[in-house]
Length: 503
Image (cartoon, rainbow, N blue to C red; front, side, top):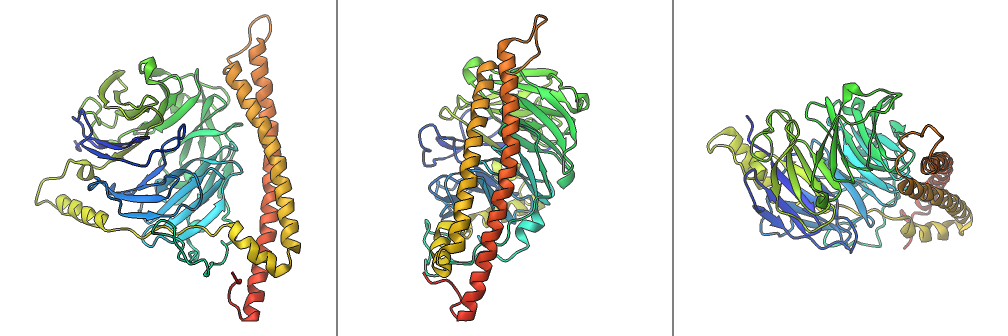
């Protein structure tokens, strides 16, 4: 039996590392406190579990794992604020992050170079995951869409140079790099939900994996990538806030706002008929909503010290800051870890050699663990910052007298204003559903008013989403026009012998 994994949890008060028998964290790492009411920052854990990238509003920071005195290995300026989701590729070569603006970023981890920055969603990115083979990045957004981006289209391009990373955000303003290349093309864009996606998990199988999503419309869905073919939907009594596959992917867990974790067998799902969960794990009401779920891989003992062998364990974080390790088959809590400050808690699992369970001395595994630790202690390069449209606009405007650029900018602003009005309707619909509750069928004497109101709100949201999709296409066309103009400007500068726009 593989030794238990160690649990890494990140809350508003910092990072905790818990071993299988710990009652208090064996390692802690203090982080800058997020603004009041804001969730903790997203993080990316490298494939070997030895380096942790944290993305707080003040800037990206990298730490060795376990923390060595809390001193960061690297700081870099954020591309924008705030970043809300992040992940490292399985091979450890790339880092990806999504922002509240809807933009996504990919960096080359060994060099810190920014490889891509593109508009992944019209509304903010809400979740971001690499496929298990590293062949794609899956993003989910507040626009209700899920997009699969092939890795080759994100990294097979020249990096954006310019010295805008590191040291807390310094950089030579006189050496603006050229603007990003044309936006990457999604391998697939799915619309499993009418309202913002709140949680997402991608199974095994690379870009052909199954996708588990949950949204503010009160349900969870399983679909196939990249076709979008529906496997089935899960009917929930409470809004979903976290999802995870079982270790063998024969089932799915959905954490809900009422503190319950619902389980359903994937084989029981039907494309046309929602299925109710087969069982539920219920924490005390005081625990609050489930904020994250992780499952140990097959063959790893339950993280809490037994009882969850064979990959049957489940780790859940709650809004009161607590972390519980469950034995789902028994419906029992194996261990309750000391609490973070109240609020959202994010989770990850560390390999035994990194988390505090080193392999026997003198073995090949011990030598490999030592090499990982030495590599993690070396400072990584800072992550480069994106050159924003605001930085480019004066240069481009001066070049063409503000004519074509100003027209394109005005048209883009008008499209975004219309889209904002549409999203106000979506928010109204979401609020109506929250008041009315999840539709659960009509009564014999007619549909209850609350259910009718929720159904009307859902229809209004669906219509709004259709309009936003059309507006996204219009904005994309305008962006292409601006990119063509920028390319023409660069050619003109080359002819003039300047080589770059004057600053």
